[in-house]
Amino acid sequence: MENTEASFSTFGISEEEGDKLVAEVIRYILFKTHQNSGCPIKREELSQLITKNYHHRYLPTLVLNKATAKLSTIFGYNLKELQRSRPSSNNQARSSQSSVDLKSYIITSQLDPGVYKKHVEDTTKSNLTGFAFVVIGIVHLAGGKITEESLWHHLGRLGMSQNDERHTDFGNIKQTVETLVQQRYLHKDKSNGPEGLTLFYELAERGLDATLSSSFKDSLSQIVTSEATAIGLD
Image 1 (cartoon, rainbow, N blue to C red):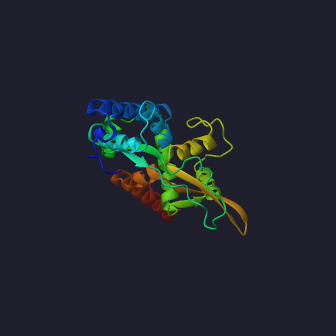
Image 2 (tube, rainbow, N blue to C red):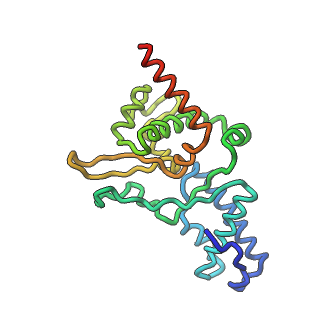
Image 3 (cartoon, rainbow, N blue to C red):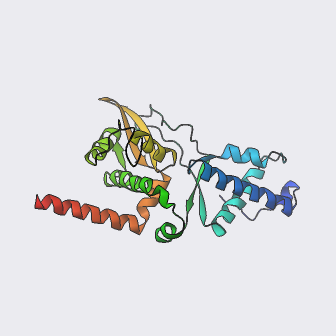
């Protein structure tokens, strides 16, 4: 998003009215993110909120630009536009997430992972955080993309089955994986090949962000090293 220096006066709106619009959009983004556990927010929702009383075609862009800047400088969040749902390699099968179009957003924290964990992270959700780490790690080590069959094979080695609906820590395992898709840690897609329809997972925006943190890399490196040592001792 650009052109944050544009003025509300261009649309015949006072700066005070414009600031109220920006504040309303920020409240909506933060509330929806909390309410929906980090699932994407459609631009259409935000545009309707902005143009409810002001019918200017380009006003949403200005308000979202200013809201993005304030989310960053005041709250320490990045407002990220989601990538366009990508077609399969043979240009036939569309993503199962086609409802998440180009103009949808998520917010991600700018805080250092250590600081976030200490002061922000909800410890009551540590089990799900650990599950997300495992799944993202598996996909990352597979090169950022893995078939659904292979993912469940690796999770199965850890004692987790897609048919388990009452896991002690995660409840419905299959639904928990789908939650990672909804929250944009994973992107689910499908393609038609010689062996028929194949489902696979790729790292989405939040998943890619996670793999860039030094703490993730260090933890994953320790696990891989321990695994290799264990194999060597067998």
